[in-house]
Image (cartoon, rainbow, N blue to C red; front, side, top):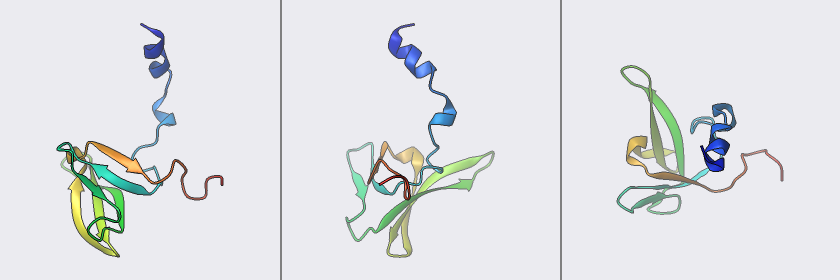
Length: 94
């Protein structure tokens, strides 16, 4: 095992928040085809990660809002990456 592998082995799951526990604002969702769903585009005002109960466990989704109305719901399995507005959670440091 090389040094880089050892570094990753030392990271516990407790150190990495789940997408549901991460309270930073989502700026955009990057899609596998190169597309993007982003705040500010097509009237989108916010994107929120949430989960719905599936057959055996919770299934991750993103709610895409225009103002206070859900414009669409996007399955997390259709998202390649999540880009956050800031590296800090609300209320965390200045």
